[in-house]
Amino acid sequence: MAGFDLSKRETREELTHRFFEGTGSSYDRVVAITTFGLDKRWKRRLLAHVPEEATAVLDLACGTGIVTTQIHEKVPQARIVGVDFTEEYLDVARTKFADIEADVTFVHSNAETMELDGRFDAVISSYLPKYVNPDALLERLEGHIEPGGIVALHDFDHPRVLIPRSHWRAHMWFLRVVGRLVFPAWNECLDRDLEVLIRESHWVRRYREALWRHGFEEVRRERLHYGTAAIVSARKPR
Image (cartoon, rainbow, N blue to C red; front, top):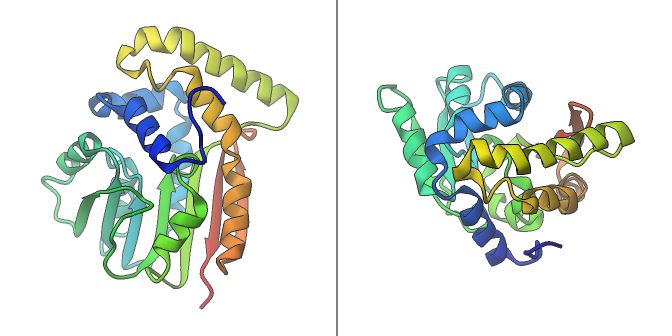
């Protein structure tokens, strides 16, 4: 693989720093533009997994709080904890709740080593799976998901069908060539390493297998937009 080894957690941490340092203020706009608005649709599908009656929700890799805000709008009664590895992004997320009465806490931590309090009815995440070892994450979550609780994970994926895959590769090329000119702060993230990471992480298969191993039920995969993204969800047995 080009420039990094997915099997090493510290290398993934370094990769995350390199990709996202200095991009917090522009993240919301850039992710909307570079996905042609699909990110908003994907997050709505992810949010659908949060039960209406949820009283506690964990938002992993909450970033600038896009999903965190939507969780609060859907279940305003819930305690929400947002965890992210980048303090710069958390600062943006906190400003979104500065004038809102909500039981929301933001934690600066690595998802594989985070310290959690209490249990959650739903654990959701957008764009985290390709960076994190599934067994390490599920072991960290053990004991913090209510019986019957939901896990729903969303991320980019590498299309398996020829025509969508060709379009995906053309889009990645466009981002490397044009995107880096338009958004210079994102030069590192839009480098070829991102394409390699998405293509080689095989996160959908790895997380489905790990969820079964850790005793989850109703493990499902939902392909989004011709396989360019996916949601993997599961339920903890009651």
